[in-house]
Each structure stands twice: as C-alpha cells, then as structure tokens.
View (spheres, rainbow, N blue to C red):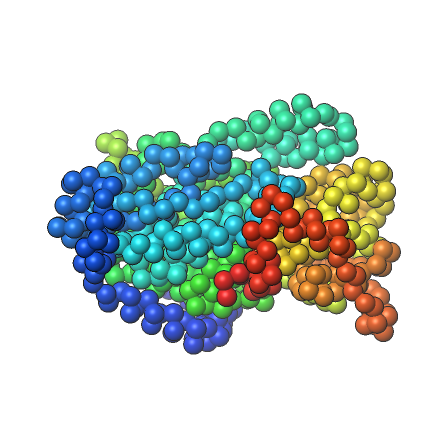
Length: 609
C-alpha cells in the first residue's frame, strides 16, 4: 500500500474482526511454532544414527555440507507425477534445485512426495468422491515428509486443485520453517474454452459422437502445464501471488522455458533469504495475508472451491474466517478480470494483459489490499506488482508494469472494472447457506424462480435429461453430495445438459450440497449448501414441484413453501442402495473415517480438527 493511500474501511474492519475472533487460537499457534524455532538445527539435535539415516543417500559433498559445514538444508516436497499435465514438468525440478542450492552454499533433499489427482480425469466417476479429501491427505503427506525434522527451510512443488491447499495446510503445521511455493506454469493455448464447451453441449444432445468429442478435448488439453481455464488450479496460483508465497510473477510463466528455469532457481535463493530474515511461513501467513488471498479471489472471479479450502488454510495458521467475511469483502472489491468461465479469455491471455501483477498493483494502490503484508520478497507487496523478465545476458530482473491493461476485454483497472463488486455471493434462507459464482452468470439470470426437480445423484439427473424429462423451467436440486455423504464431489458433468436446457430458453438453475468449482459455466448454481442433506439439512425437505427462488441480487435461497408446512416436513433419507454405493469400491472404504468426522463446508470441510 502506498503511503498516501489508506486501507478501505470495510477491508480494515473485516481484517480486525478476523484478528479479534482468532486472537486466542492464533496466539497459541505462534507460541508453538516459536518454541520449535528455538531448537538447535536438526542434524545437531538428532542422534547420530538418526542423522546417518537422513544423509545415507546423499553424495559425499552433500554429507559434508549438511553435517560438518552446518549449511542450510532445504526440504523439497513434490507433487510430481506424469499423469497430471500440470505436475509433469516437476520431474526435473529436484536436480535443478539441488544444483542451485549447492551453488548458494546450501543443500537440498527431496523430503517426500504427495499424491496429486486430477479432477479432469475423475470427473463424474468414483475417484471424484475422494477428491476433496485428497486435500487433507496431501496435508498429512506434507507433514510426513517434513517430520524427518532435519530441514531448515522447504520448497513446495504443487499447482492444482487440492494440491496447493493441502501443501499449504501441511506446511503451516510446520510453521517454524520458511517456505516458498514453486509453480510450473500453464500449457499453451489450444482449442478455446468456449469452443470446447460448445462441443460438450453438442455431445450432450447427441449431435456429435465420442470421436468428435475426444478430438475437441484433446485439442483443449494437449501438453504439459495447467489447464488454461480459470478454475481452482489457476486460482490457486493467483492466491499464492497475492499471499506473497511465490517468487513474484512466477504463476503463469510457461513450463520448460528459460524464464521458468530462472524463477525456479530464484526460489532457492528466496527461501534461504527468508531464513536470514527470520520469516517462517507461520508468521508470514497472518490475517493480512489471508485477507489478501480472499480479495484476490473476489477481484478475479476465481474458483468457489476456495471458500472451502482457504477456510481450512486459515485454520491451519490459527485464523478463523467464514463465508460472511467473503461476502462483506465481495461488496467492496471490484471484479477486474474476465477469464473463462467468467469470460472468453484463457490464463495465457490474462497473463499477457498484465496477469496477477496488474491485479495486485491496482488493488494495493487503491487501498483494496494489505500492501504491508510480508512476502518472500523483502520489498513486500510492491514486488508482487512487477513482472519478471530475462535481460539479454539471461539474468533475471523485474520491471514495472505499464499503467494500462494490455487488453481491456480481459483485465481492467479499479477505475473501470467489469463490476464494482466481487465475483462471489453468499446466499441464505430456509434452504441453508450456500455460495454462487455470480461473475460467471449473466445478470438476467441472477434471479431464478422455478419448480424444483429433486435428484439424489447426478446420474439420476443425467438420465432424466437423456429421456427428455427436463424440457421446462426448473431448479434442479441434487442432494446427498455433501462431505459426509460421499466426499462432496464436483458435479461438472451436469453443466452441459443444464446449459443445453438454458440455451433452449428455459429458466434453469442448480442447487446442491456438492461442489461445482471454477469451471461451472453460465448456469446459476447455488453450491456448497450447508447443512448438507445427510446431516439433516433443509435440502432434504424439498419435494418435486416446490417453488424455489434463487436470488443472487438479494442474496437469498428460499423454498416458497408455507412456513407451517415447511416446519412440519420430515427430511428425506438417503436410500440404502445409494449409501452402499457411497461407501464401497475404488478406495471409498479407506476414506470412511474422513466422511464420518469431516466438518461442514463452511468450516473448511476439515477432517483433522
């Protein structure tokens, strides 16, 4: 924040409320990590046999550096696998990081790997029911990697949906360590997202076959790197930039380029500098940092998944946030970006127009972001508003952005935003609390009033569509999709048929206790409804034909049923066959404890509290 710009009073008030609400929890958290920081370094503290095990696989030079020279030792936690395009580029990162660390007088070891699954592969299938819980599994895997307790700092290699929040939650439980996230960048632009969506809708209507659909999908998803729409994976990267956990400007630089290599090397020097600055991640991720992430999400119309994930991230740092905080911030944060599904552009076009650096600079200078929050750069948030470049000699440096956006159809300044309010809206009423991504929905669809058609599974809705039973105005209620029921899967397979119905002129919306995330398209969707149906939530009271009203202007979600009748209704129960399906096969049994113990969506769907 510039000295002449004061912080917006609503942002100041929300931050102060979060600080006061979290005071006891945060204080206890900081006391614990500060006690850990006072211990002798790992290889000096551990027994000789423990140390020998920890360096047995290292080279002679590395052993000398770690044990005798007492040089800093960096732990690498990686999500590398080669089934995920986003994580495939990480294959060679450990060697590059080790080489760079040695040049800088340090050492680096791969502390461990974390699982990384792809919602694009599992969408609509059993694996998607394990997706949300993979976040906490990743957090635990991060803890297992770092619990060898021989490291002075950590580099975290991860990008996609649950991977970044999981790594961050795990790292915050080792909050005494300085940490830097190391991204790998997006794939090149392929078939446009709008063209891909059109083919999907044609396939849903039977107008094209599997061969044409597969050809379109492979043209869209075609090379290493993240998918190019602005879903949860790329929203992750935007939020990490706003939190100052990346080397500034690292988010959307393509894989396998000289600039990407230079940024990865620079991450090593940054994490060593954090150690010298005595800025561990547990202190860096404070209330200002969390609020900056929330603001970045709203200003760019990012994934609704973060209304779950960042509640859990904050909780890991001893900070308590809720959906009301998001809603109040959304009322004053302008929407500065139009990236698919909020617009036609992809993240490469977003980056070319100025990217995260432009957004952060605009928000900080306008007093709409905490400019004094600590970051991995000693210059703080000011550095996050600059672009990284290589000079003619191949040296990495940063330059100031032009005053104007490179493309006003994609990215705008705070004085001419796409909307004066943020991209997310809290809905509440007799159907519970939920959220809607209004930035993806045209204004003429912000209010939908129509009869309910109730389904207990997404398969039942797809079957009804296939049989021509949904050719009318409707609000589809898909329940028993919450974290207790089946792990709260994403329901993206519902987007094409609902979009087809909407395209035919019908008033259509979706209400569910499941997830829809950042690729939800232009169909109004009230998602994350809490309490969920399996926990006795009001979605269980909805009956076919009930008139429902989704009002994203007023922020309400109501069943227009007489109050006495509504109060007297007994919620529907999940059928035995559906319960059996949710409990067994393809790994579901292993997550039974998580389904049993999980907190609500608004509490971050945490399984570890």
